[in-house]
Length: 509
Image: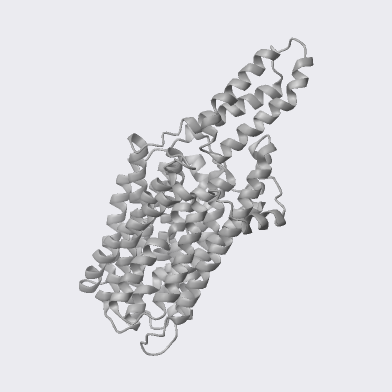
């Protein structure tokens, strides 16, 4: 009956009001649905004794689904949620963590003149391929996850990464390293890392009071611990036995630990029902997605340039391989304590605000400490500061994606981010080496790369300021939207977004 349907709808909206406050997108949905009730009151009074119309039933079911989806998120560090965080921690340990050891191999290739006909930028391109060749295919990997499942795709990635690094240890020509240590390893890491990013946000709530950023921060700390283990562990093997045995050891360690991690993870795809598509015109075309990609590109330009060149910077100061390895390891130490801490802060002040602060602090330390650095102690402190802050993108990128795109199309939004990260990651090591001054070792050799990194992070912070204004303006306009699709298709006037950017309201975004 009409009156009965109205009571059911009002009860659902009333019971869900408190839950809506903890999730901005859910709040917008419930508010917009409440407006629909008010607009339809007169029509219901005049209707005959018929059941709910198909439109009302569909809208009612949508509200039920949204409320149930939010209420069902455990948001606890227990059970499969905790195990999934641990599993994804080890995925990061053996992908981005192990890849940070490329700085050791880069210097071995260059300093030992293993490829005399190759330029330094040509050798540095190996690291670019390793970093970006997998993640640039993020949309395709996301599609395969929808067909094969997260665990199957991750296992395929583990096998490809193992094969790539093992084959690299037998390489005798530069193009062979491009194909193995570069492209094959990169694709393998992408097949492991991209699916893992989807899992943790499904187990923890975002917004004030939620634990999503903290959980993602713990997950991302795996790359820091991995950076320590692989930098410290591979350096003596490389020095005493050769780079070939270092690669073989690294390959076996990564494969064994990643296979263990596969058994620890579990997704909530049955509850969330994510959409896996290669291309979505709406997601790709909205301004929020585009400015987000710009932020990611500026950040990765600075991140990879700094990560891959800090060890060689120590050699430009006159220090040896041991000191260079220690400084590179200090970046990883900073990651371990920095990312969970920033994740916790982001849960309180908002991920965009936290990332803006982190980006500008990286820029500040870069100009204030890297350029004038002339001794070992300063380099260690600088590496720890930068390590704790420069990778903030890895823990806030999923949350910011969710704020722009929503949970159901979250994978599509992340695929777009992986394109930006992968494309920029491929060219970043080459840029860093190209900016380094030629000639004998000198403290000023890395002045231009340092300036480049500083301005990259400063520009990344500016992009996030614009994105923050756009999200606030979009959320206010979205109060009258009936569906998430309408919310994504909203056109936010540039003037409105700029005014929100310039007018600090204290809103947590």
